[in-house]
Amino acid sequence: MILTATPRHATAGFTLIELAVSMFIIALLLGAVLVPLATQVEQRQVSETQKTLDDAKEALVGFALANGYLPCPDTTGDGIADPAAPIAACPNAEGFLPWVTLNVGQSDAWGNRLRYRISPEFSSAPSSPCTLLDGRLGLCKSGNITVNNRNTAKATQALASNVVAVILSHGKNGYGATGTDGTIRPTPPATNVDETTNADPPGTTFLSRTSSSGSVACSDTAAGQPYCEFDDIVAWISSYVLFNRMVAAGKLP
Image 1 (cartoon, helix red, strand yellow):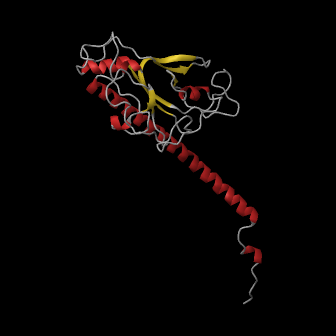
Image 2: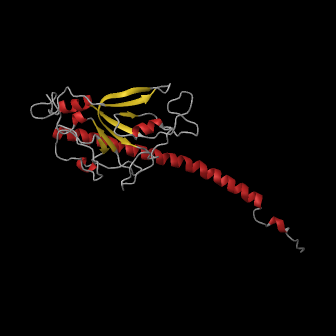
Image 3: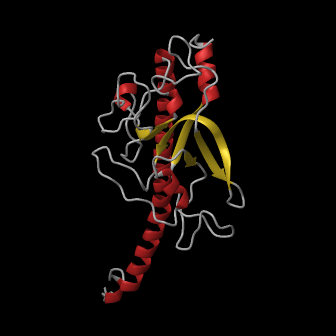
């Protein structure tokens, strides 16, 4: 029997070129998996935050049904409305959602406290002449908050008026937010006009629009340019919705 030598190169491992090609293919496959996964995670966080905001809205309505007014914002970070006892009006119309008072979650899915603004007319002791003899709200009250969006030309237009209260998440980027540990997040870049509006207390105007990732050259106001980054999530309570619930519960005539 004649033995033949096996060429050395036939049993050799991957060459550097083959290894590089293999790594490139693996990277492509991982990228195809990880990008959708990251998108799914972000969508879940948005859904969780929207659920938290919906729960907060229901809790605020429930508080109004039980007490005849809405709680003041929390301004100290302890989760309790400031002040807790009824007074003439809230000393501060904007602050954090009083999560302890309402027994709801304090933060969005990114670990930032929810902001809360109230129309003073709906605070603990409504002023005359639209107050019932027992101190409850009267039907002639109207909120002083407006929520806007933008049309195709990027001009602002009213999305909701006569708003009683707004609950706001500053989204994933957290611009203008405060963490649950009290950490102050960065303010929005000057180009992010819409997020700056939402992060600028004590304003009575808020922006709610489709989220956008932003770009190097962007504008929230100039038509023909891409929007700047926007991921705020805004929820609100209309005065008419609140009145409807209060009348249905026998809390208003």
